[in-house]
Figure 1 (spheres, rainbow, N blue to C red):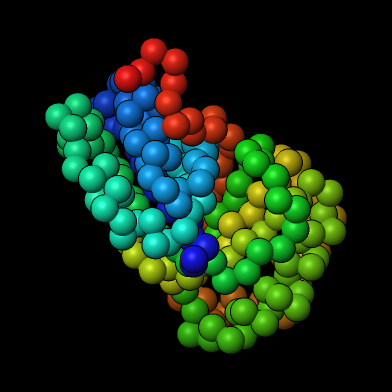
Figure 2: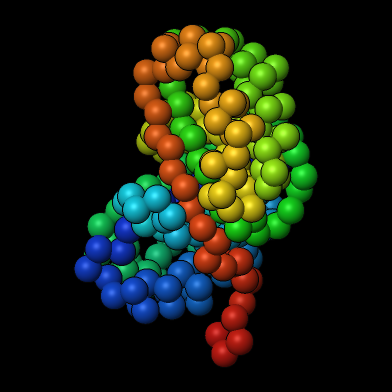
Length: 213
């Protein structure tokens, strides 16, 4: 099995927030967690003031996305189609795991996603492995760093996905040191696209909520 990440950014737009959450928590997320190979799901809200304002991410075996069960749940109900048609943004991306460092823990309070494209993939990879990740994991509250390559959807080619205890980690001297080295500057000079987002925990997706069919 190939470890992957389903990463979905959404902005409700004209969809009322109560309707958006009810649809997501009672229909959309439970349907995905019913698919064998989709192991867990989480919802986060923007903590950086940027849009789209919501992130859902699912840990899974990539093969699950090609199964009959997954194709079945992608056939939208009338309610789901109505919501999706009115969303301002629905940005779906699929990633394949490159590496995973740190402590496994469900539902980190904050996640930081950094999507990158570069003209020097080998240099970027070596910097992450040899310098950047080891330094970040010494910062208090920096739990885990996973890196992925994009296999489906829009956006830059690579994703670094960080799980941390809170945005206070950004003020720590270790974080400032990890993000201001000469080697980082050389690597970043070859980056052609970069998207950095910060999200705070909203809830854990559930297979079925009380009162649902």
